[in-house]
Length: 198
Image (cartoon, rainbow, N blue to C red; front, side, top):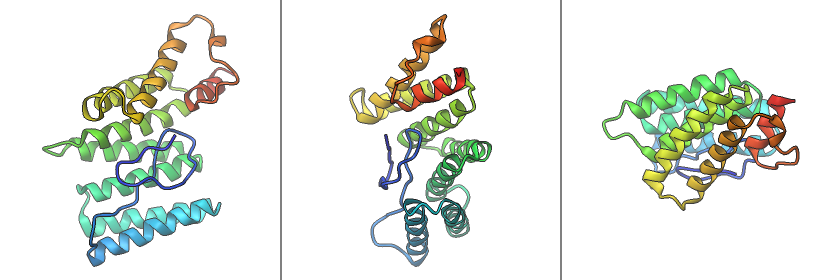
């Protein structure tokens, strides 16, 4: 279920997503501060302290922007983490806005990072799907799949997971009866679709 561009933490999030710790070898004082704040936020989430975790991820994002700038990929990773915690805490509008901001930053780079873009689009698709915007989610999942196939290959675990999401949505949108979504479907996409049609 969890995907990571840097390191996955053991957070059980409700969509195919990952929180990203920020680890870049021997840290500068600024990187050390960012890593410490991110680790603290993850610990708070694991301990069930969601609101405190939200505040800690917000602080990590502010540190990343202050010390590395609003166009740096370390800031993008902190935005991904912040969007994830907003998603988990039910703040879907905020999560969507943050994911879109992160995507714009990565796309503005001369050499855009396809794996990171795939991850961000996949995470954004899950947030959009939770809002029952099924067609929009399908388009985002397909974009994520294309990026993942090109950058990671067709058999990578992330590519296979994204392909499964696309397949479920294609099946649902191509069917005439919503009953095609099994109520006992344990996949996240299936569960979200079931909520949308209930």
